[in-house]
Image 1 (cartoon, rainbow, N blue to C red):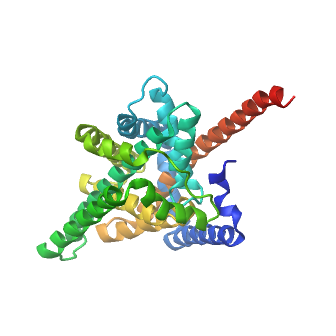
Image 2 (cartoon, rainbow, N blue to C red):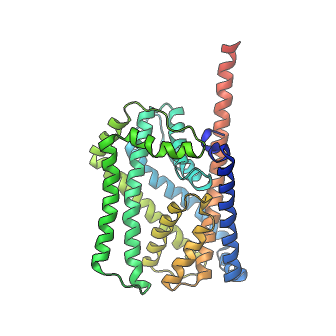
Image 3 (cartoon, helix red, strand yellow):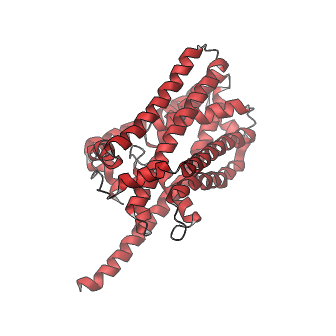
Amino acid sequence: MPDVGRMAAHRPWTAGAVALMAASGLALTVWLLERLGWAHVMAFLARAGLGLVWLIPLRVVVAATEVRGWGALLRIRRRISWPLLVWLGMVRDAVNTFLPVARVGGELVAIRLLRLRGVNITTASASVIVETSVTLALQIVITLCGIIVMLPMAGIGASLPMLLASLTAAAAVVAVFVAIQVRIGLAEFANRTLGRVLRAVGGQGLPFVPGLDRKVMSLYRHRAVLARCAFWQLAGFAGGMVEIAVMAALMHIPLTLTQLFIFEALIQAIHSMAFVVPGALGVQEGGFVGLAVLLGIAPDAALSLALGRRLRQIAVGLPVLFSWQWHEWRQRRLSSAQAAPTSG
């Protein structure tokens, strides 16, 4: 397995912390099942039955939609076909979801795989960095919109000044993030922040990428490309709402369009904040139940939706991880075969 996969195992305390987080998440899930009733939750899942299999191709469609934004930033069509880019995007998501890499390992894996396909490391790195920045900006806005929509539904009063202050704070966070990149250079900024994180968990930091700052800034100047990237990210978000809607329909759980928006917006935010827990195990399930209580939805029904989402993540993510490892193994075999005649 590449270095990304060994980050947590490099230091015993890191591996122990990851195992503790995973065990705690699993314990929380089991506790929720006991508290809400195994029979009630399983009854919802039984209603869906094999219909849940439809979530697998739906997830592929959503991933294929989201990756178009990344492709717009890459602007490479000869060496990187769309199906390959879809696979790269799914590998990136699976690594971030299942491996203890603080939700940055998937980006590093994607850059590595692009390099193996002959893509310049500067182009690959810049595309991932800018796409991540766009995703962060959109997620902040969507999360705040979800909170604003949820508060009156949950009977929680919020004044207009407080909401405006929240939106202003969110805009400031995004502005500061971009300004830092412009002011001190993205490469130096990444080395100061992401590089330290990787070294702290036993990684090797970030390699020097020549011309990265200029490439990132050139992408930021192409507003039409950024707009296309944002559009496809939003389309992917809508696809996540459709996924919840399909599960709810299969389980006969009535949800309004507003409730679907709140679930998808805030569950994504919760999943991102729980990056220290592998797969956000337990956190995702608790998030669904907590939102259900606020929205007046049966908690056992919400837990069923969370478990349906978890089953989809496993059914899609684990095969993708295995395909990535097979690809790495094949690359090592090819490298060894090419090096053998030279050594001889």
